[in-house]
Amino acid sequence: MSVNKFAQLRKKALDRLIQGGILHSENVIRAMSLVPREEFLPDEVTGEAYIDAPIPIGHGQTTSALHMTAMFCEYAELSLGDKILEIGGGCGYMSCVYAEVVAPNTETKENWGHVWSAEIIEELAKSAQDNVKKCGYSDRVDVLHRDASLGIEEYQPYDVIIVTSAAPEIPQDLIDGLDIDGSLLIPVGGIYQFQQLLRIRKLADGNISKEELGGVAFVPMRGKAGWK
View 1 (cartoon, helix red, strand yellow):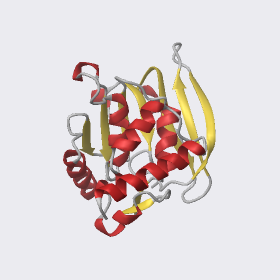
View 2 (cartoon, helix red, strand yellow):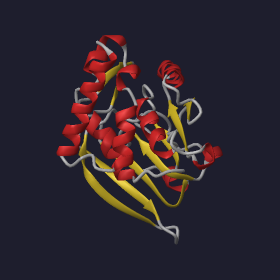
View 3 (cartoon, one colour):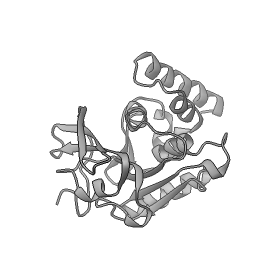
View 4 (cartoon, helix red, strand yellow):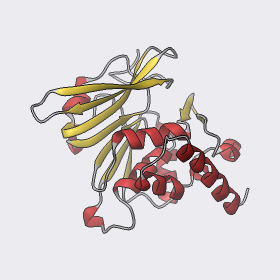
């Protein structure tokens, strides 16, 4: 499929998300229009890049549906300069969308934020690193092969932590890793059963607020804070 054809499909997919009220922030629309999802997928599913559904990326994992990518960006209220920890980087696509919001090429690097994307499956982490480099985001996205289910202390505090797998409960370590006014987006619930997407905000007094954003279906979280 040609580059122009993919660009047309991308625009149609984003137009549907805008019309559906899921996608509305100009900076997120810009980011999703610039990052080529087809470049992050295995060859056998490249043609499905702009179908709004989870797409298999190997090793029993999927990359989230386009509407979930948009929702994570919108719910996280991403902005220029934010420091982001992504837990479950997968193929690297969503990492680069976040980076295009918090560290766009329209700004000088001094204003840039950064994305640390952790992937527990070594083969996926390596593939994501290659994808990020190929698409020109390696100066804004670090792909790390490690278990980040309890956070990554050396880059704390984060403005946003995004978890793309379902946890049995909210890890306190992730809350501890947030900056004041930072937010954690995390699906919580049973394995392949009902899960709730939660937004946790860290308040100035150290307490948190918790908001339920709706039912979701994610693969189970692996690692120390995940499902055994």
